Length: 282
Ligand code: SF4
Ligand code: SF4
Image 1 (spheres, rainbow, N blue to C red):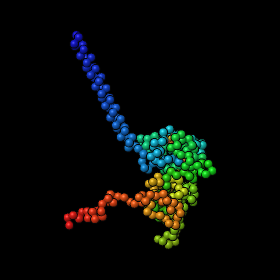
Image 2: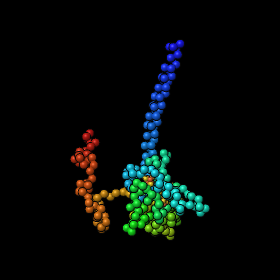
Image 3: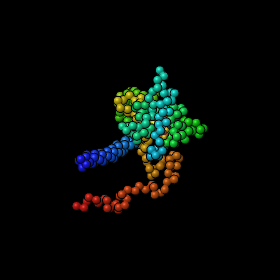
Image 4: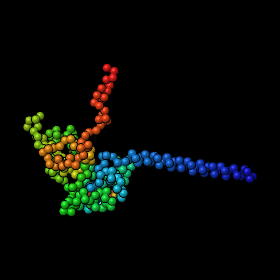
């Protein structure tokens, strides 16, 4: 009885350890899969952050994903429809399926744009400085929505119907900085000879990236849309200076001379080396 009776015990123990190992293995695999998934859901360069957000790399380090900004946005008293019902807030906290680091606040203008509230309630509640109140505080010490800078609106002139000559000023009228951040530029329609174009032109210095224009655009996919500034703008570099513009001269005042020399892999070679590349056979 004794040896026979012990057999099931050994087998049970083996089963237990096998299961434990399997579960541990699954746990590690699950962890790896989740890490890969979470990595994919990392911040996209297209992510639009709340007002006064600090530079993206620092933002990701400083934001503790508490959601206070998004809560303040949702609960602001103005965020009610005419029946007093709460509307969705502008700021969302990213979920796994969103194009932003999970748990961080962002917004999508075509869902809900930023209404540039006078008191910018989403900013002062941030406990970490990920939303930096000084970025939206004017010299008088007041919160100033015109100082918000979340991105820059860009017009796709090929799909904007105002550039076709069809009358449309939806984006111009939706802009909270009317006739400042978006202006209508008059142009003669040479094709018809008797009509005019009224083309929306965005002023890069005053546009806050609120996205109200993008939301208002009448085309199937908005012909005006907000991008983070780094994506929307080019960079002339220190080689080119507007000699007639004092502000632009200031831009290069602190340059180091070695900074203004473009250095590429080719710079390390003599011109004859790379100019003759591929001609060895001749
Ligand atoms: S300023 Fe924009 S993001 Fe902030 S609370 Fe108002 S609507 Fe929301
Ligand atoms: S309040 Fe500040 S720390 Fe909290 S989620 Fe918003 S940005 Fe991040």
